Length: 347
Image 1 (cartoon, rainbow, N blue to C red):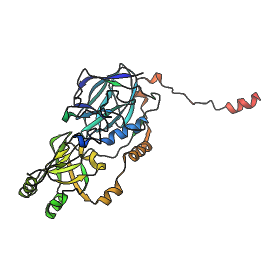
Image 2 (cartoon, one colour; image 1 turned 30 degrees about the vertical axis):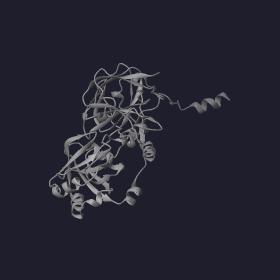
Image 3 (cartoon, rainbow, N blue to C red; image 1 turned 60 degrees about the vertical axis):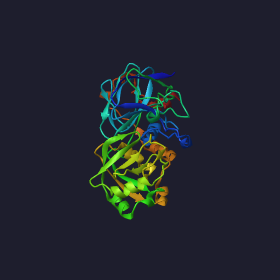
Image 4 (spheres, rainbow, N blue to C red; image 1 turned 90 degrees about the vertical axis):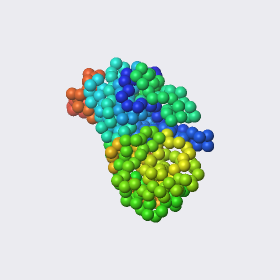
């Protein structure tokens, strides 16, 4: 049985996101998809799915939700304050969501992007193999109060709830950077200053990318000269563009496909979730590594999913917080202790 996820209120910017539409740069279409791809991988692990599903991406805050059919949901990404009928829910975990219940997800307590993934996946119409909204070019639009998102049926609603301990990535930190085709255009002094600088994630930022501020900007005149003589080139998520004012921008999932600002390098895909989840005011720094080092430390997404599955463990709940306690099997597997003696007497 399929159902719907009904949105009664949208506090943050809510969109449907999956892993996007890779392979269409020649047609001028960027990949798009979730800002934190690792959050979708973690949700797939928690739900026992073989691959990440389309989810509701919640930027900054969630909203109020209801479902028309029972389904498990995974809550991953930036931790947000979540309640089901007033009962607090653990983040990075799976919960059973029944019709008539109200799920309320408040502001992010850390990070920026939280994800609500239904166990059967979202059943909206796909375009070019993806259901992801791409706001920059007008594919779909933010979800709003009154919207009803179609869902596929939960394939295993009886499966036990799981939780997952995740490595912290919601407060900034170090980003590994590899050289790109334009890195040699920068002087050794600029590259050294960039590697030593400590940046702050600025307020300016969206799904196209985030701005970084530093106490001291880089030589603007030299950067303006680079920009003046530079032809537009292909760009993608993770690229770090330097404006003529010496301000770096880390490009996100919905970045344009062509850009004219020089790129000082590219953030490793493994570290891009940390960059995109850094809230305004969080500190970020860069460490240049070689391509060989990057290839050696890169973890493919299939391996990330397998590793996340191994870290899943049962979600234990306080019986006092279980509103539907009477519906649970509390005595399954209990024995009297004298069964063996009774069998011997029967013989």
